[in-house]
Image 1 (cartoon, rainbow, N blue to C red):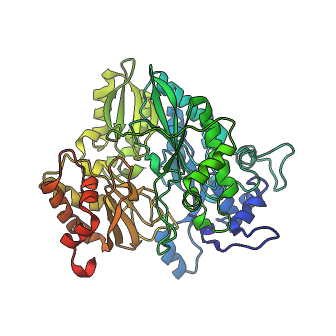
Image 2 (image 1 turned 60 degrees about the vertical axis):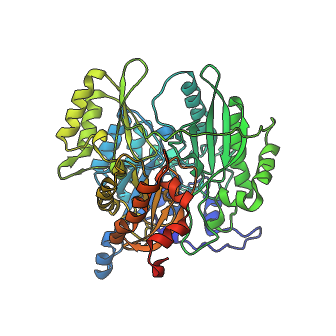
Image 3 (image 1 turned 120 degrees about the vertical axis):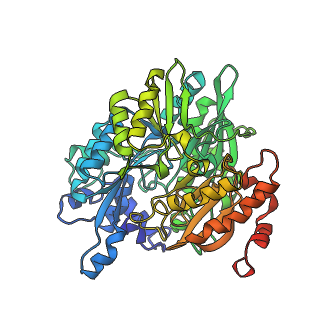
Length: 579
């Protein structure tokens, strides 16, 4: 995160209603221009706090290397400033040219790694301010954009990445494309600053409007996901707006179920902030779905909290006013009648890893990326392997909400060569890794995230490899149990929806949550507070052993914990002083 994340959250009194300082920055930005262009041209390694806030809308976070803070402070130096760039990739679809462009950028201007996010985007870390324009131009040249990657606007829209064909998926993909267009910002600032390079700081060009967002955009970030009926691989309930594509007769798109008010972020020691799952709002026909989604966004735009950013997400509006009130406000903005939401059922989530057959005889391969990080390190030369695969076989890629990548359009005869290339570069095949590793996720946290209070991406690999033998010893190696870790309570790796969640509280310690469900429809609950990292495997052994002995047929670990109850688990498996 940037230095601007520390901007005071207290409301500011104006002539009108009190608003946060970030609201003032947005309103005065001339559609996200501000003084970015002049600061970009000025010497120095960082942007001002105001510009750092606006840069988020352009897909850029100003960060620093937190591993080097202490050294810099001791030497009387400034922080080691750098930029993270997030490319917006609706549905995770990446052309081979687009992927290779990001690989080149990572090597030339970044820290030589690519990170696949839990929202099907790509993050490039370690870009210096002086290289920022060339980096964004290179992304644009690959026909991709970072506009909308961050900021108080619609973020990257998720969609099930399985490369299916047929009329239903064609209609879903068309809906995704229409939705992206309808919910995207219209400002030309992005091209003026980064691509054309012709903009001097100034006003809004004549005729430019933001018909959806207005002058101040949204009160807070807004996340949307499209799930396929029966398959919740996108964790649709964690989004401000969830859209479930419902199947109709003859393999058609019958319509869309709308869910509203999901969100997993919270602030430590602030009980008024909380994670929650989205609630059913309505069902709409296919031709009504984009208008209904826009209406949801405009209700949040007009009624969301602009004074307190901790209370600004859509989930708090739904919580405070009620889903019936929210539905009425959405209905007022539509020319058609909202129908009652249809019942939803979910089959076990498919992470789409391994080999699968596509229509027409081609294959696709889902490759596991531990915590989404694509890099070369020691014998594991993952970045080199994927680059060579893309250069040789030219697959279209799909990034998944589990931080993995799917390589599509592979000929059946290519399978031995693909596997051999991965093995030659020390990359384990997806079929060879344990379920414990396969179903684990972590956020980046240290050293780049300014909000992290504990390790995550650098801590989970070691922890998972301590949990693996316990799971195997208990006869649970074939069970699908999800483990998710974040370095702070904001929940970027969706820890509150996992069977097991680890949320950092301070360096080396984590709150442990149990009782979510593998399909992502229910929040888990706090099991133990401030557990030292090295004590977590022993803490989990008791509940895992009891689950192995007492589980019902087909019952998952999270479901078992929920049925038994967290109070009972604490009574049996924790010392009294730790409860």
